[in-house]
Length: 256
Ligand SMILES: Nc1ncnc2c1ncn2[C@@H]1O[C@H](COP(=O)(O)OP(=O)(O)OP(=O)(O)O)[C@@H](O)[C@H]1O
Ligand SMILES: [Mg+2]
Image 1: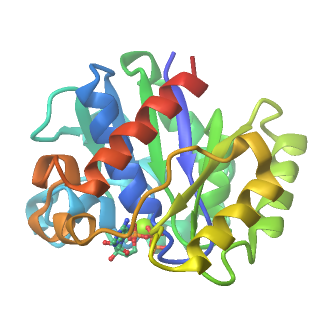
Image 2: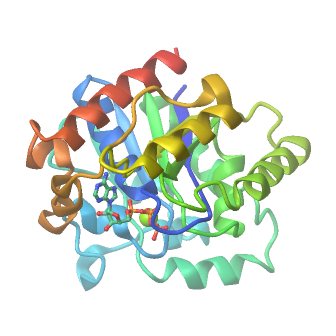
């Protein structure tokens, strides 16, 4: 059965999508059959992998899956990379979220959808939106692990307590086996003392749950999505690519 990892933080722009895409890429490169589920109406993981989210011929996406109008297996598409599949999302997913609010089984739609295909993968990575919304709760309920990227800047840990509360609630109500896989420091800038201060603060709070690898602020990481590729495929020798490769090893170690 696949190990399902939900990349989440309700704070915006902290590196969730970048982490989801690059973790999936390096897992696949390490011969792990991997599915990346774009579960954010922004569709950044989709466009970051070179799929045009506004293309009318895209067909069904996570929107139809969540509305029970398509099976997940019908919308999964291969990426350019071996062992790496994508379930795309478009802005319509936001409307679907509103629609399911009044429907039955609204919290377990993603878990139900994953059931059919989870035997086909070693890892399923879910990219979530920057909110503690119904979609995010669906992501948490469908997962074995939460992965929390935290940007090494002022206010980094703001909102984290609330996120952990939501996680506890999900554990109590729906998914007792959910675990925090770890906290990843992103956009680490070694030239500033702020980054190291924030990293120290993260370690103080999360102790061993903090990943040893930190992701540096690196222009190649920021450029890669505009070319529709993970940074590992864009410039595998860049500091950002190397860091995501190292980080992926830690994830594999922790999910053994
Ligand atoms: N290590 C990095 N170095 C430089 N730029 C980065 C790095 N990580 C992410 N970025 C850039 O920062 C921005 C935010 O990253 P990303 O989209 O991954 O965050 P997010 O948490 O998914 O955002 P949202 O909350 O909107 O979904 C993007 O433009 C991305 O390219
Ligand atoms: Mg994102």
